[in-house]
Structure formats: structure tokens, C-alpha cells
Image (cartoon, rainbow, N blue to C red; front, side):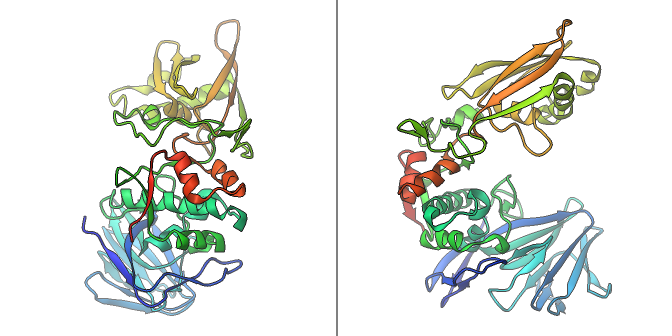
Length: 418
């Protein structure tokens, strides 16, 4: 894919979000920053877009579609693989293959699903749905990522926010172009990007003070993975994702300094989940077919409807004590899954099981069926790379962002790419 860059001339003012605007800060003059394309909305029906200032709508071959006044709303509807646009009065402005939304001011925001976005918008269709793609420079994108990934931190923890900014930038540089028509999704499939409305002075300053910096190993951007809570120990990448390419900088390390774990402040440092036999059987029967569909493409999972759940057992663990293999047994059929698959199969309404660092206590009825399951665990997330709660604690105790990054990504260097 051809790389695209934005040339920022003069001082482009970077404003933060809604409730309390932080002080203005600026990108250095003539900074050349990569452009990114982020999928921010996908709908088979309609999408509404508005702005507090006027904006222009054109096709991608520069044909004028309309000029939308400040505060007015436009509605986009899917219409036979085209995007039909309606103004605030309900009048159709026509159906087009692609649309581009632009503004005159770099500080202007678009509002979509109650979220604010900088830059420009590109609207297209794919597989029966409208796609809204936010096009903006890398650093503005990161400003909408940092707080959403590591939390709303104060100045006493800005070094953790800076570490997150470098990790997020490294991820973005390494993975830019991974999809066909956009670079990233705006959720946990890539990095959580909620636009300009979630920016703070701390998160914006963290991005600006690390402008263009990435973490490298052997002169190449690393897989800068991160997660919430290690539970006292991290794990190795190839153990979690069953890769034949172990990353030397993603080792299993203790998050303890002295006799205290850095991530003890996390609400998920230790956790416990309990289910009745009926509850866990329903959860597993609901989730297992979806999780294992790729692994067993020809399996008829409907047969499990008439079978009872009889067995839940850890088969093996890695050196961090995270589950490597986990067995799920029914009356006739059984499946051995990875620890990460087990997390997804035993997921609750909102989240996967918090981590694969868990132990089970299974009580049974007289006939051998499961009566209750008590699951005790540690940590939140996959456990590979930077533990965000540990980074926050390290920042509070005086570690710099580079020290934090090198603690979790062993043997790496921090380099300024632009």
C-alpha cells in the first residue's frame, strides 16, 4: 500500500475534548506525519453526521454534493451498494459510490454516534454496509487512543501515558494497512479510538512529547502488545498465540519489585467467578461453536444440545501458570482448547474470562454432572507485553516512559521515526 503523509506547516493547534479543554499545544513546524484511516462506523441501514461548524461534501472525484450548514445533520443510507445522502429536511442529495466530508478548520469536529472526530471523513460501502472512515494524521489518532487504553491519568502518571503513546504508535506503524480499505478498526480488534472527545491535557501532552517515537528490536518496530493487568507475572507471546516465531522481547517476567507486585492496585489483580452447573453449561454451549468454528470447520455443534457438560479441566500450563490447554467434556464429545479460547468460551455478558491465569474448583452431583464451578484467577488480558496497571505504578514511583517500555519489552530501543 502506498504510504500517505500529512505535511503540517506552521503550528497546528491540537485541542482536547469536551468537558474541560486543556491548554493548547502544538506540533512542531513542518512535521511530516503519516496519515491513517480508521473505521469509526459500519451500518447496514443509516449513519448520521453533524458538526457545530459548516462542512462540505464531495465525491472522491471532487464533484460537489452539498455544503452543510453549522449544526445541521445529514443522514447516510445504504442504497444498492451506494451511499444516499439526505439533508436535515429529509431531501435526498443523491446516491454516490464514495463521499468525502471536509472542513475549513483543523480544530473542527464531526459528531457521529455522540463521538467527536478530527480530520476528514471518507464514506464508502462494503458487503452491504456503509463504512465511515476517519482520515487524520497519526498523532491526532493517538490522542484519541491513549486515554481510552491506559485510563484518565494525572500529571503524576504522565510517564505511563507516554509509554502508552509509544506502544500505541509502534502498533500503528507496524500494522498500518492491515485491512483492504482502511488501516484500523476503532475497537479492541486494534486499539480503542473514541475520537477527540476523550482527549485530555495529559494524554495529548504524552503524544506530543513522544512525537514520532517507536519501540524497535533489531531496528524494526516491535509487536507492542499491551493489556490491563498481569496478575503478578507476564507471559511469552508464542505461548499465548501458539506462534512458531517467539519474540525475544516478549518474555515472561515478574511484575514484582521487592515483595510487592506493581499491578496490585488493579481491581482484577485477583478475581473470582462462580457458576452453577446449569449456568456454565449454557454459557459454553452458546460460545463454543463460534469460538471453534475455524478450528473445526466441518463439526456439527448442534449435537451438543442433547449432551450434558461433564468435564472442565486444565490439561497444561506455561511457566507463568497460565492455561495452555483446557479440556471441555460432554456426554459423548470433548474438545481440547487453548487458554485464550477457554477465555472466550467461558465469557460473560460483557467480557471474556478475565485471563487464562486461573484455577477451577468443580463440584459434582451424584450422577457426575457439574453442580457448581468456582474459578479463581489473576490478571486481566492476554498477559503479553506491557501491563498497564504496572506502568501506572512505575510512573508514580519515578520511572521514565523509556524505562517502563524497556522493562516490559526487553532488549528494545526507542527511536524517533519522524
